[in-house]
Image (tube, protein in one colour):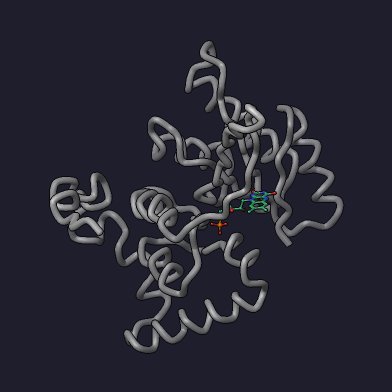
Length: 227
Ligand SMILES: Cc1cc2nc3c(=O)[nH]c(=O)nc-3n(C[C@H](O)[C@H](O)[C@H](O)COP(=O)(O)O)c2cc1C
């Protein structure tokens, strides 16, 4: 059982982690959901806060430790490596930050939950593909997984684990069995084992690393055919 923590203040991460270890958790996930809004706080200062939280928890418990982050960093690979150096044994890519909407009738900002779409998987696909060969930690894909093919894609770029939330909220727990069956069927049909599939399209193995970078911008735009 993996306990997922989101703590309000710097010292709270360590306190919560110790409590959860005592309560019997098998592993911890630090869900660092932080939207920096202060103009006087630099990227380096924000990243330092993340690293201190990870270091604090690493020292406070011996449990396996995963860190869940959002996608918005100036140099995600460098920061991911720093998280690993601070003690993260797995990274969950990505947290999905909920954007607030504007209610024009009430003239206010309002939170509205919109579940993810399949298209959102593209973000973790790119970054797992990029990080797979550079970091020797477990990588989990989170965002937009709805079909067995989505799970296969995440494994192909190098995910060790694939996470599903919105799809389960829409369809209930039985959707998991359908995903698993679909992945088994895909592997059989393509005569591949899970080990052969995993990481086959990571940045160093996909044949053209540029495709994971700008996704061949010109070719992609020119191929647009409208509706
Ligand atoms: C109703 C709801 C509650 C969530 N609560 C948490 C949470 O407590 N901790 C967390 O790390 N992520 C939370 N998430 C984010 C999900 O874990 C996941 O990262 C995100 O929904 C993207 O995955 P999906 O596309 O499969 O939904 C929540 C998502 C939803 C829709």
